[in-house]
Amino acid sequence: MLLLCATPIGNLGDLTPRVREALASCNAVYCEDTRRTLTLLNHIGVKKPLVSCYRENERARAEEVVKRIQSGETVVYVSDAGMPGISDPGEALIQACIANNLPYSVLPGASAVLMAAVMSGLPVLPFTFFGFFPREKKEQRALFDRLKHLDHLAVFYESPNRADATLKLLHETFGNLDAALMRELTKLHEEVARGTLGELSVRYAENDPRGECVLCVLFRAGAEESAAPGLEATLTRLLKDGSSVRDAAAEAASLCGVPKKEAYAKALELTSNFVK
Image 1 (cartoon, rainbow, N blue to C red):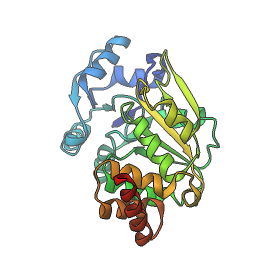
Image 2: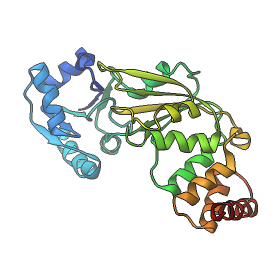
Image 3: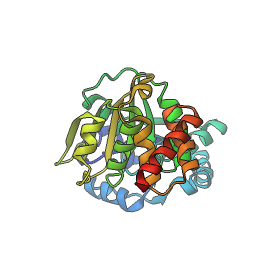
């Protein structure tokens, strides 16, 4: 059968006895990064064949896994950290097992999503996990269309190098919502920074947080309509980043939920002020 196993997100002591037993008794370990998994296996004194299985080759590897299970083997899959299938490979492997009527199971353990949601100190239920915060503007606009209707906690993964920009963008679009930024979860320098989006943006404006981050934001439906920074701040940022008046107005109108004519008029006003 196939066993998808959660692995520690930082502290190796969080490896569960069941996962340890599965790693010791399986026929092979498929993993996102063989180097990371080798470190884990060395830590528990286990030697197993390692096969790389990352997002780009997961579907091809799924065919291999199916054949191995059909021949009577037990295969373990682990991602670099946390639960496979949660912003990590794993889904295609399960789909292959279902399609071929093969047994699979999931062995629970560490999860950055669940830990961060609880540790944020914000109301947890319900919450929505959006994975990694998108980098492309088109994807950001699509996300914001969903977030403006959200009325509960949202959880995002984010790179420490982009945390400041993401906090600033969310603050400009949705105002001073309550939030928490967590980094280095389960590790020696674990930290939780709580406050509003504005406060957190100021905190990390010059000094990027170290270590992988999880951002929790308590959204309120319609909050973007009364966001303090609002349209002017959004247009100012876009224009200073080099966008044309037309492009800046179109994007700001979408982000702030205002008519394009209003955004365009405001953009013209701002550019005239820049000239002065």
